[in-house]
Length: 111
Length: 116
Image 1 (tube, rainbow over the protein chains, first blue to last red):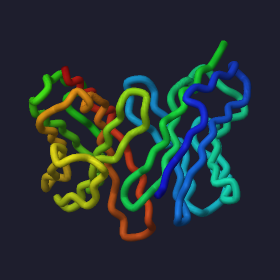
Image 2: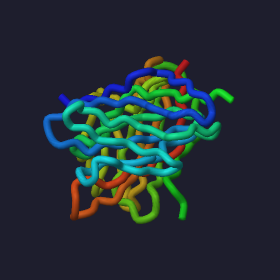
Image 3: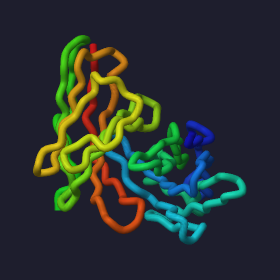
């Protein structure tokens, strides 16, 4: 069965520090993978997607993610955190018309 | 260009009642998916509608039903509400392209359902 696991329900970093949000997946077929961001009381916005092209994917707001098949990972990074990055981040896997989601990681930015 | 819209924004119901949630897809989109997001969890796929038919369904009971209209808008109906149905219900729309496997889903802001 396909699944997504996000390590850490909460991640706290200082403003200006590196952001690293972890995502591991399980899939029997080559996966399409996504990162979405959800701000309070808002819907989900696509940050970036991996669809079997380049393994290093760049997204909006300075985020990027690297697909590593050997590690079944798709971790999200940003070199320098900004206060506006505080939100909940979800990793998701495409599975035959539906998205399978991780439980989410709440990113907290310390001033 | 209006994005995905959902109504109502918030809803309070009591156990046993029935509820209808509505979704209008992004302009040019013909496919609508519904997700349930319980507090502190990731979204769970309920079902997807395409060409006015339910194309795929997640692990939800028959109390959850839906409909898609000729203008591609959609409704989610939940009967015999349980306390556990309290959640944020998200609608996502996409365009069914004939090329490629994946079509980006655009999400609405959701409807917050509280069952007392």
